[in-house]
Length: 271
Image (cartoon, rainbow, N blue to C red; front, side, top):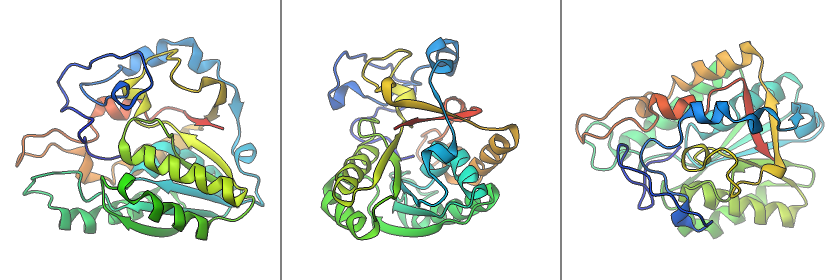
């Protein structure tokens, strides 16, 4: 999911609302919009439904471009299970190894994280019961924007016509998420593939009915209780992200109030 960067303040600080679509308007700070506010908004339930088969026909290939280990489960852990069940071939491109999630930490050094976080992804995929082909771009965590051309070229080599590419939304709020969305959008245009974007941090900085989000493109994928339960269990694989860091005093990257917004019996996709 990614560590707070220069655009992000530490949890507990008040959010500064903004009314424009500039990067400063998508600030990931404080506790964000409570999940209860989202659940009370009728607009979520009114979104058009979509099925896994409508997102990716069985004969097509799904390519998931994940900025950090855990994004592939948080954003589309349910979809991955449904695609597996329908026999769809899936490829997971892990853009970074998430080595910058704990700056200045003596508990989780960058070398530790480079080793541990891909292992957490492997454990999570096993829990989901899926086995996508996993490719690693090995771009430095927090440096995707600076290496946009490298990612774009990698995608041009990987993608083929009729692929459906899933990645984080181009205005999701985290620089790495936005850079992945931009690189994917450029690549699918050249390769004649299809782009589907996924909000992750958007649930934090935006609010119900927020016109900065492309609700006209939003579709709701229902998850059965079994599928949701496996997704919830898979998240527990990301132990480096779930606990406070006593060596720095920083709280978990994925505290309960963040997970609440991402673990529902549905997933939202911008088609």
